[in-house]
Amino acid sequence: MTIINVLRYPLVMETSNGAEKPLPVQEAGCCASETVGAATLDPSQSDMLAERLKALADPTRLRMLDLLTRHSAPLCVCEINEHFVQRQPTISHHLRILRQAGLIDCEKRGVWAYYWSTRAGSEWLAAMRALTL
Image 1 (cartoon, rainbow, N blue to C red):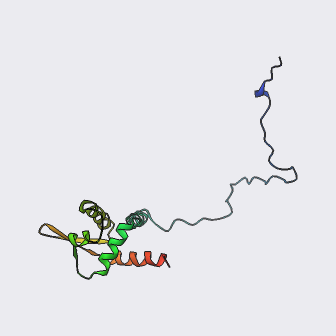
Image 2: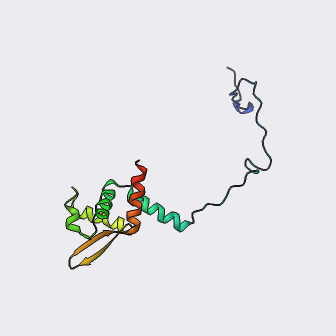
Image 3: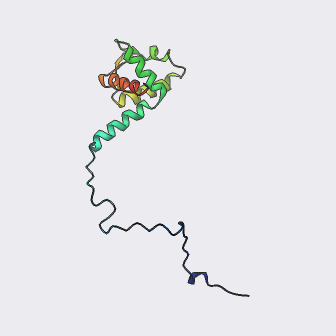
């Protein structure tokens, strides 16, 4: 029986046919000659942008924003419920996310809440529509 010490031999895999020469390694780093500009979005801008994009990433919320944008007067939550198959707690959840993102606003009148699209909501919806063209 022959014993081979595998730790004595380095494991090297040749992946080319040998005709190609390896690229020289740059001492100063791979991108030392190029200057990369700083990010143009500051953290607060990127947080706001991400929050609004998350809010608009749901089809139900997009449809809600569209509904509110098409009406000049505020809509009661019960009027909004009529347009969706989801139950009232789910509708309220979606409305809260849109409100937190600054895309809609609301006002309490007695026990009912009335919602409308903000200017930012209308602008964002127009931008989302432009993406589908």
